[in-house]
Length: 338
Ligand code: PEP
Ligand code: MN
View (cartoon, rainbow, N blue to C red):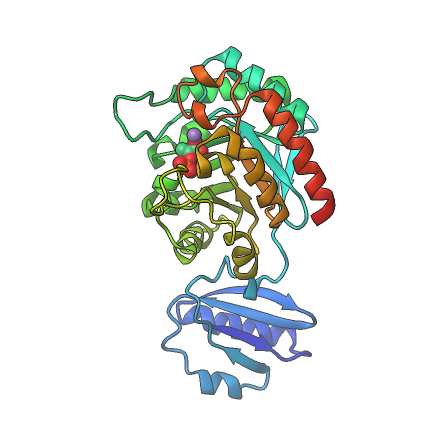
């Protein structure tokens, strides 16, 4: 429920109303829409007498919101969210509200040489953040599971060497202490509805890259973002990485229509991952260009210095040279859509 106050409402009148809402067990998000104060109410509003509320002198109107997500909802936050991610020295990345970010790097951190070589290459090509999995969610328990804490250390070395902020996946809230120097915590597709993990991330102060689940709807993605945001962490970046359909030629089916739909529904930045969406290196560039043209705020692309030898997702990984070419073409598309 949203309560829009009349222009001219005094600070004291507004505070009294907010206090009353809070006494009803609700949390209140305050926004400005032009010169009107908008109060977004979070919690069980079923006990609020809407007609009585509308009769108050200071209330212009009350809008009942059907969408169950509030913090992520553009209705309560009309401007695009901009998230700034700190690197070392002067390097930082910004995403959203017209700022475009490219997250690139290997599927998994394998060795110090590998991650530093890839980090330097993607930085030179224009990436603004480095990705690399240390904790890997693999379908088979016999596959490489990631270097875990050692992988996080190597990512920090690569950050030291390049200044690029790092993005890496968390699979278990008990590992959170290990992520204190990570710049963006990724929630992978398989954990999009791990609600206990999402709740914990709601209490942390780092931006979260939330990937869409393998078979999850847009509403479910937004509700998962809401879990994080309602805990107090509003820095959420949404990531489309393809969904399961009957098609098996590609690893997943890239749902590009999600970009304008999400921009309509939410103020959060939207990133597209054409690597996991397609599973084939030759499809990554065209889909990266399409996502950029479709209004994505950023891309996540897997890059490996030696894809055939990669311990994970080699088939969809670009070489540094291919990544450089892709970046050039993506930059051209950005010039057109900016
Ligand atoms: C990844 O980014 O390495 C990954 C595992 O992606 P997803 O969760 O989208 O499958
Ligand atoms: Mn991968």
